[in-house]
Image (cartoon, rainbow, N blue to C red; front, top):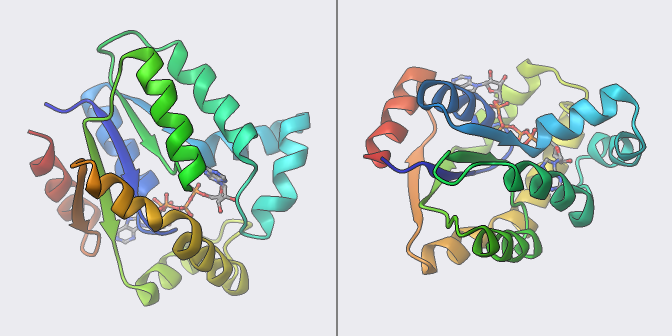
Length: 184
Ligand code: B4P
């Protein structure tokens, strides 16, 4: 089974939801940069203070901050332990930095799962989630940021033969079944 995974997709596609279920079921380290940043904001740390306003606007936090968080978590991970990166990388600079880090660690990505969903459904899901960064104007801006900065990663990983797409519509269990089928 593939144990070094990356989840890619627009905001609200359900990356966090699926990542949590899969990581718990298979004993993988679940690394969500969104959750880690929200924890820093809640703790009122220096990093959290820098991230808070950026996240509230629906923009991307600086690459250096996010990379520092990911590097410290992955470096402590035993060889063969397995991990699932959720919401990272989000632009080409992060993807290049991640490739370098994983090369150093000798732990290459085995599969990138792209979760695809229509904008209308994304908007509805995020509006009903109701997090601080989930109002309509901010969600639309996050979708633009996704298209401009994150969507180029689709061809980046496709060219490297790592990408598989799943339809993210349907119940959580249905989507989980589609993802599980890609891992064997
Ligand atoms: P994230 O925390 O990554 O969140 P997201 O993309 O909005 O949501 P996700 O796709 O995980 O959807 P979820 O499972 O919650 O990012 C938030 C912010 O953090 C970014 O805007 C940015 O500012 C910052 N950030 C994070 N990573 C960064 C990075 N690498 N670089 C720079 N900045 C970064 O699902 C959404 C909703 O749908 C939930 O309510 C869920 O219950 C529901 N849902 C899920 N699956 C469903 C299903 N099958 N059917 C019905 N509802 C479903």
